[in-house]
Length: 152
Image (tube, rainbow, N blue to C red):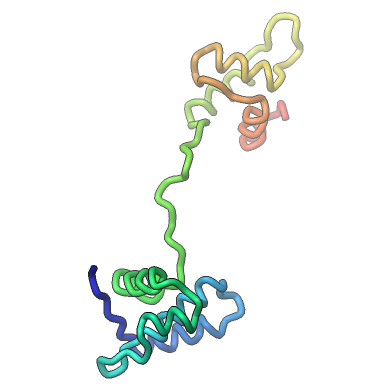
């Protein structure tokens, strides 16, 4: 297990204090900030042990370890901020190519016997053309609304 050391500079202590006093700081971030303050090694010695911090602040020792790791790798901002997700959990089904086909279908002449395209007809045509496996009429509506189509 890698051991991390927390030695806050005076500016970092002030930044942490400001975050802890702010009413806009989330409770979870506030707790991590308190852990960081307790882990601060003044003159090479820690004021509290990991077990004592865990009992005082009612956090797990894994949380304390994670706070140390975040501070070492990213500084004070990493302790208070949330990690940004690199990709969405599910990739978008409607890509630019699919949007283009929806708009092109909407702008084309409607089928014989119809005055205009309906959302369901556009969705069915896109699926029949093999552009996408399945799509709902609501998704078609949202794409057209996004592009401010006259059909909406």
